[in-house]
Image 1 (cartoon, rainbow, N blue to C red):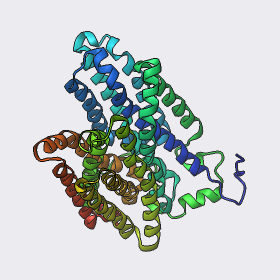
Image 2 (tube, one colour):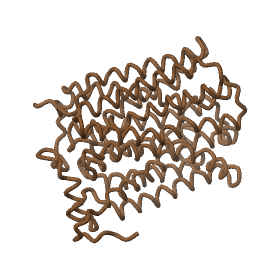
Image 3 (cartoon, rainbow, N blue to C red):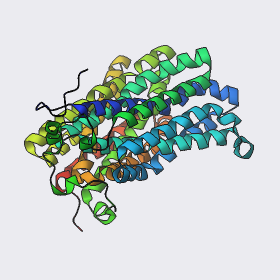
Image 4 (tube, rainbow, N blue to C red):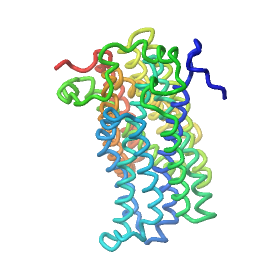
Length: 435
């Protein structure tokens, strides 16, 4: 592909190549997060682990991931996403590879095999915590306001791609070369993409040798005053914590996280155990919600950008965020109660799609609030999602066993509806509260 010379009057399009690299990192992030759920089938008997112990190993990742969202975002704001993302991807890729060696590490003598695996997964979670806030930091730096919803929608859409690729590829590697090889391969892939990111990316467009002034004007043209401040020295926590929109965003995204983690943890088993699909059938149809996420995520980002451009930031973000969450609630409640299993899959999958239709307005709203602190603010918001995500995988099967799956999924629909109603109070265009 021929690069447009930096002196050309035609704008270069380097920002879209940066976005493609972020998408690759997003896919790797999800591969390294999910591959253990596939290899668990061989790991558990080989290492003598029970279901409960494996669940605790899974939870160790989520704990580290939730705990370091804000620090990961702050580091991106302070030192730039090029260095922070490079370090983070290398960090979690090394520990992904070490997952294969965890049963033989010296740590086993102190805390056992389960403890060693839990520590390694916790450390992977710490590294991955920096990913999404720094995606947001990069998009805030590299894209103008009218492209940020689409940008983060494409990037986080990598979740759907990663979820579709991980089970079959990991299973094939595991069957043919052993479960350990799956972690070595994933770790190596991460290291390659980390080096590619460090080689090509820059923190700011003006730092890139192939970006011309015409593209810089597109990116920076609408940002004024405070929005051009880079690498802030001090986080204005008083302004952040006293701004109502920050709390409404975090509460709403907590609701999204609760519902999203049901799809990630229980949808496959729901299809097999409740809807009566065979194991291979269930595995095939379990990808449907993630395909919907891959489509709806950038679509919602594009729509919120167009509406924000035409009607203003507040209405453009809130209309898409609120509509998506409310539609998700509607489709989930119908899917949970319809008799025909294939129709149920369709409605529940579209429910996941509508849920992720809101990703663009959520993440863009943190940049709208304050571009210099986009990483910190999005890290705070995503902490909420992971608190909700920590609760739902445990609460959902208990409700389902006690009251039935329609009730368990009905509660998820109600929570999605609450998340949608929060958007009536979200005003990102007003910025942070002055201090």
